[in-house]
Length: 281
Image (cartoon, rainbow, N blue to C red; front, side, top):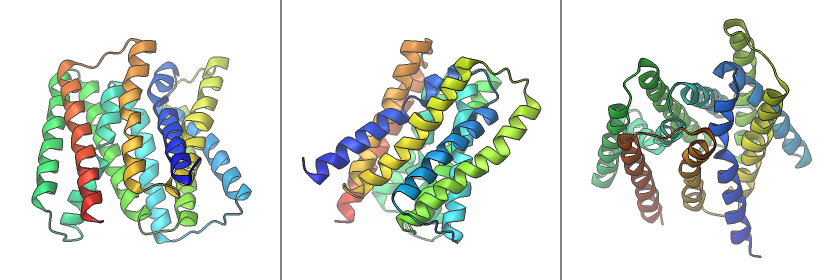
């Protein structure tokens, strides 16, 4: 088996593991902050184990810290959004991160957007509008906004991760998990009457190890074997599978406008990734 094929299989496994987040979060009757914090605490152990097994030393610098803070915001808001809106909305709206990268680089880094990039931004935000046409409750609307903010945090993490090597990147991921655990667990327990069952413990363990911890390791290994475009396109399996698991095992079906909006967003992101790869080769 070639290194490229190994990388593709690693990324495929990563995306599938990522995709189970929505259904598991729905079944844990805890505060979203507690869920995010407990999941990250377990994931932090997995990240540390990986770094120790590969003799990877922590690399703490400005970029890794900022990337970690942004990623903490991303993973926390994603769990909150899953509790407030549909899993489909939460995951697809998070995947608008590349569009936020374009906007941030244009506004703050003064990079001029090309016509194609402007078109992608316009189409993506057109898709986002469709999500809000389905939501009539305050909680659903709020969940959509939280999911969009999660995408913004992911974009900031992308930008700063692009400036650092793998040691600093893994350090940033570890920082993100530690921040999320340190804030989420005590705040969640203080604001929500949490009842811990054996089912909850099993599910949170699966979230921490299988859904978040191991996939980041697989992603790091895959990224060293295949291109960023391949990682990104294979990773799009996550927002496709996530709502399917929730629909099949939880019975939550997104509205028609949200489905159309999801198609618009995913197609826009895929087209941008392909176009951007061509521009850089």
